[in-house]
Image 1 (cartoon, rainbow, N blue to C red):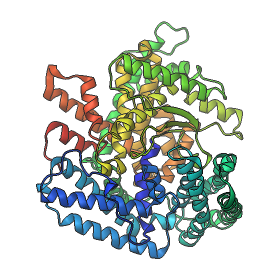
Image 2 (cartoon, rainbow, N blue to C red; image 1 turned 90 degrees about the horizontal axis):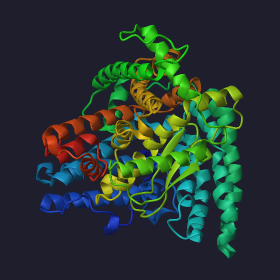
Image 3 (spheres, rainbow, N blue to C red; image 1 turned 90 degrees about the vertical axis):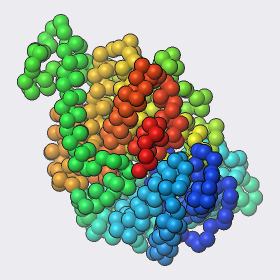
Image 4 (cartoon, rainbow, N blue to C red; image 1 turned 45 degrees about the vertical axis):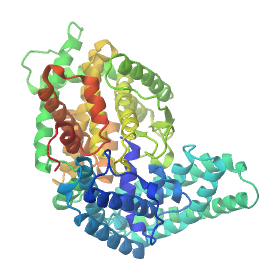
Amino acid sequence: MSRSLFAATLLTLALAACQGQAPSTPEAGAPAAEAVEGEQDRAFAAVAARFLDEGLALSPVAATQVGDHRFDAMLDDLGAGARARAADWTRGMLAELDAIDASALSRENQVDALILRNQLEGTLWDLEEMQSWAWDPQVYSGLAGGAIYGLMAREFAPLPDRLRAAAARMEKIPTLLAQARENLDPARVPKTHAETVARQNRGILTLVDTFILPNADALEGADRERLDAAVAALRPAVEEHQAWLDGTLVPNATGEFRIGAERYDRKLRFSLNSSLSRQEIRQRAEAELARVRDEMYDVAREVLAGRDGAPPTPERPDEAQRQAAIEAAMELANEDRPGRDEVVDFAKHTLDVATDFVRSHDIVTVPDDPVKIILMPEFQRGFAVAYCDSPGPLDKGLDTYYAISPIPDGWSEAQVTSFLREYNRRMIHVLTIHEAMPGHYLEGAHSAQHPSTLRAALRSGPFAEGWAVYTERVVADAGYLDGDPLFRLMQLKFYARSVANAIIDQGIHVDGWTKDQAMDLMVRQTFQQQSEAEGKWIRAQLSSTQLATYFVGAQEHFDMRRAVEEKEGAGFDMKRYHDAVLATGAPPVRFARQLLLGEAIR
């Protein structure tokens, strides 16, 4: 998954951080890719600039992540008064947007106006109806950890400047944690959410020990005294919050993590901004899963041909024969796995291999922006195995991080083996394609070149996640690893996971699936290891609709490519097409398609 996509999420949640009128900055960002022409375009440019200016002022943590560093010394305010002001501000922004004649806008501005409307309506819905601030403690832990990590992980400014900003934010984190204790109603907080945040909370101090203290000597005099005082005050504040988490929230968390059909459908609309309904997503996912299992069986027949002791592989298998053959073929890949301490080094190797392959096969233009593999920071662990963390669109020339969660020290040998069977050598190749090359890293580098700052700040999750899934198939089709059938099998398994994600997301939050139902889909039908499935079960409780972004975005990318291929016929060029898609700046895929095909923007 792409960590930078959380900037838009933080912005949504932390528009509750309204602190009054923000300073005006004309350089907040051009609203569109083409020259602004006409009265309505000028009016929209003003609305877009105001949204970026004031909206990012309301969420300093998101602003830092986007690359707007005016508010690096500030921290989001989630108090009751701030939420009320934020709701009024959001309604005012919607009223200004309503006053613009969208039909008179340029095509690029029509897209940005629809993206902005979706963001504003989603923000208001979350503030007043979904009320994440009242039941999801991840809102607060994400802001507290991100407040420090966003300042210190990249060298966007001299170290002393970033340390001074970090000191100012650390001074405010105790207030944020106190707001969490005031706002969160244990009767509404799901148990899994409470337990996860209780495990993550001390990761704030790990960030201090990792990023702040080793660099503290860069400050002197009053600045150093302020930093030391901020750290000294933060430690007991985190421990006080830990005591509340352990003693009050976790024991009394009785909320329902399933959000139900009505709220799911509303959230799906805001999160995906897709033309596909929940029912269409489910129908397509179930049909696609059946197709992928058939394709996996065909590959398994190739892998097992002539092997001693292999199960039978008839042309027309029954369900038990299909299952046995795929499992037997997968076992060959599962046994070729790195050692416990070799995962990160092997991931670096796969990044080199994938980069050379994409360049040599002219799949898409590869920029020179740097990418590094790192261990996932502790406060971000427990949600995903890996993510790509691209620099903010306003930060140029900084590193992109391909972060991998290390194997926990407390895991048993059985847990470690299960994990490494899931992330065997060929699967790590697939993961690198998805997260880095030509997936999230490359997409983020291209999208950052689009001149619409608004579009960059509100980058579409389904576009980014869908692109990453889409490229897995593209690279496999191009003959990656010399057409190794076991790599193809792992690529199909990884894709089947994304299909299963969409089904599980609905199954749990709408249909009331039990853990056994979810585990059957993951372990038996899509061949995931027990440890991976256990983690996904937790992740599905911690989030809703996000798991659908992979499948929905990929389906829309596949649909868009077929439409362009049909239009261009023999003149279709894959690299030119991919460059053109990424040049749209990561809007929801339906808008990218409308821009490329000259369709009406809607």
